[in-house]
Image 1 (cartoon, rainbow, N blue to C red):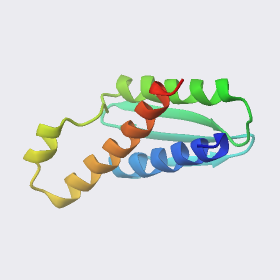
Image 2 (image 1 turned 180 degrees about the vertical axis):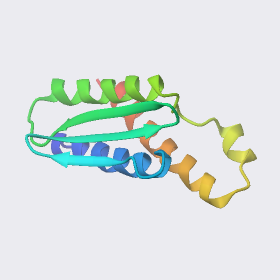
Image 3 (image 1 turned 30 degrees about the vertical axis):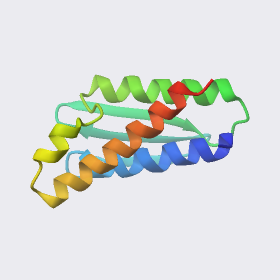
Length: 113
């Protein structure tokens, strides 16, 4: 996958997860030199800066690693298969699927050489 596509994928998935999980009316996204996302989840604040343009593969890998770390800090880890099977609320299931997609993307980057 191209570097630009990787960053765009990560930004879009982060946006969807942020909007799905954030406390009401706390999602913010600004764009200048970088794209910054900020939102609250329970009592924690998530803040992430994404590079708008980069050709530096190391910077992208760092961005993925930082995203993994920040999600873990606010206790938004990948949902387990058993937790997904136990959900009966359709809206909650949609949220878990989004979170799972984001973690799959983050894991794919972690395993690449």
